[in-house]
Amino acid sequence: MPPPPLPSRTPGTWDVIVIGAGPAGATAARVAAEKGCETLLLERAAIPRYKTCGGGLIGASLAALPPGLPLNVYDTARRFTFALNGRRERTLVSSAPTIAMVYRSELDAALTEAAAAAGAKVRVSTALTTLEQQGDTVTVSTNRGDTLRARAVVGADGSASRVARYVGVQCAQVDLALEVEVPVDERTADRWRGRVLMEWGPLPGSFGWVFPKGEVCTAGVVAARGNPAALRAYKNDFLARNGLLGPRPLHDTGHLTRCRRPDSPVARGRVLVAGDAAALVDHWSREGISYALRSGELAGHAAARLATAADEARASVAAGRYGQEVDHVLGVEMRASGTLMNLFTRNPGLVHTALTRLPPAWRRLDAYIAGRTSVAGIMTTPFARGATALATRLPFGPAGTLACEPLRP
Image 1: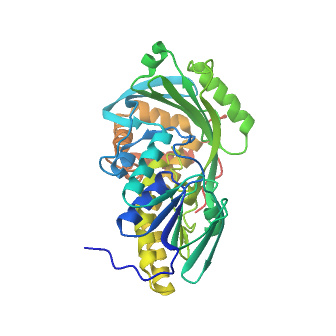
Image 2: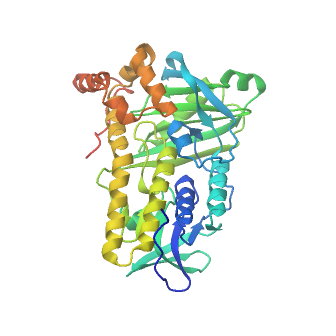
Image 3: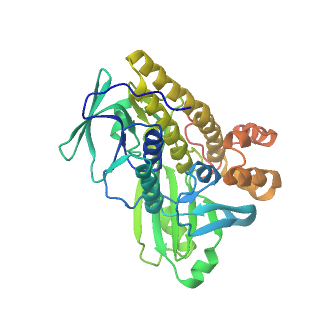
């Protein structure tokens, strides 16, 4: 069925402006353009640009990519090594190759090219400076001195989003991730090829990871924001133990990841947020690419509906529907991952034992990684419900088993 005709608009006014050309923004721009909207995609940097990210595409991410997207995959994980702060290491084999290893710079560039091919106009090195709404028009100002107008705006400008502040996004969890991309020799590359490491760390809710990408390994650690010195010490210890501290890294960066409160808004008038800007990130794994791709698609459709809204009553309905869709598709996932995060933070040893010693637990995680189930599907199993109940009765242990403040509803 063809999309409804777009109402007449003031000359020089776009139907949709998208801020940010990451997975959420590029997807939203592509979808809006495919719906017939005159769409402008603004990106503050030049494309391609480096982005701090593990670059592992799980099944849900791969399923959300546009068909035929050209993308370089540098490795595909089949083996998963789990460890508890460097101890009790155990490697499990996936039922099928999963987690495609990519570079975010290349992924974002490919998604931006797909948006352009769909008809979206792309302007790089253009950053948002101000945003305001009046009636059925959103006015955007940029660092280039432009004043742009649109009937709908999608903010996908990352975890430090200006648009998120405008919308009023609220977070339940803020974490700091420290990451390096390290060139490795042939022997080290062979040791990691096809294998991912996930280590539960010494800080509450922390973990470290190694993702292989041929001649490079992406490695990092993450924990709740608030103790950067301890996290840096953990990073150095983690890299040293895994033979990745010596080589000079290609990149050595840090960034904040934010997880939204369940009642946090994702729209204000004709302005929507998606991806990291909406704080749509998994509480436990801090995985955000699948959330970005899926919320970007929802935002693209919602923006197209806003562009066709003849009055503010219809615009309000379109924005409200977007919030309902985000909650139905991704909110359920985040509430389940919040429960898992609380379980993990209270007792990572229990989670580690379950994953490495109980085959049903590993099969569920394996199915999630491959995209055959969701976190919500995992957390509704009798085992997960029983483990959660058990963890709440266990006394707190030493560092690594301390609970952080429970996520507020």
